[in-house]
Image (tube, rainbow, N blue to C red):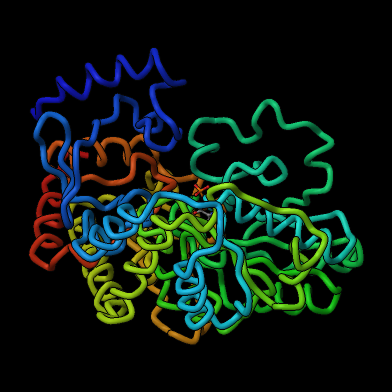
Length: 463
Ligand SMILES: *Cc1c(COP(=O)(O)O)cnc(C)c1O
């Protein structure tokens, strides 16, 4: 057994200092039952905890660390910026540089505003959409997470769902009365609501590839209809690519599926590990943001030089090395390997994977009486493993077994917890919830992927 003594002592102290001992619930290991390991440092593909244990990291700070930990170019950029001063609350050239890099990469973004987190980005995007359209209603999809914005913290996937808190106390009815919840990937529900109240809808916000109920890919038909209907009814389409940006591919899910939103929200990768978010889109919409326009949004530390420098170094390295095909290939290699060893062990799983995002969903046991198991309309005849990979770069018709929150929520979270702890014990750090996404980084090599599959082979036999 790995020794977790120092982690334990630090966590016990933390519990007296911070609610639940953490500053964000996803990291508390609550969904798998137990105490988190406390991290000392990261290097490349690995995390090192305070007891000196080493883990191959598939969490990557929940997405940002696409180049791995403590990447030399990112460290150098942060150091250079830090020497010049941490914050000025005044314009810097770094902001232009990162803005240009993003505008050059994401086809739907003409103008951008930097904020400090993904939550701030979605909150601001919604205010902008409402101000721009002079309408109130927003559509949000069940199982999608857009940060802890009051109006969006309904049926919000992993963090909320695994803790059994779909709606947080403290969010008033008034705040959510204009939020319309719809099932993900359901075109009929979408058509119906636009038919009934299209003219009242300010915006629809969606994760085009969802990562917060596990990785669930938006079908191109669904995204296409969403674009079509919002356009037809004068509503704003917001793609929340805080997670999928640079993960689903260099230009994000919008470009991959050839569906361009009016506003895109970003975060995670664009900050290279520092706290950054952004929202950007059509210039005629963005020019309504103060001081160009009247819609208020501000931030003392927004466009912070250290954060901009880390983001620039990350995107520059990604531009120079173009690792996206390799990331996708490595993620597929892991998915296929896990699928094989699960099949051998007769553990029913579905693996969803696109770009450098993937989730291993443990299906509920096959019902012995009928020997059938249904997930979202598909019957498994004792079939053990199904996998779907979105390989078409233009987003051809995507078919999948886990398509929405209902099908994800049926998964065997106990078995996932068991998998999680057994892999952790072997030095592999996976997300501490069934409803989160694993990430591939450029620092993880094929050798390490093979080690992961070998460890999983052992673990599946114990499940
Ligand atoms: C992580 C995430 C957010 C919230 O970003 P924070 O920086 O944690 O506030 C919003 N939307 C999506 C899709 C995310 O994955």
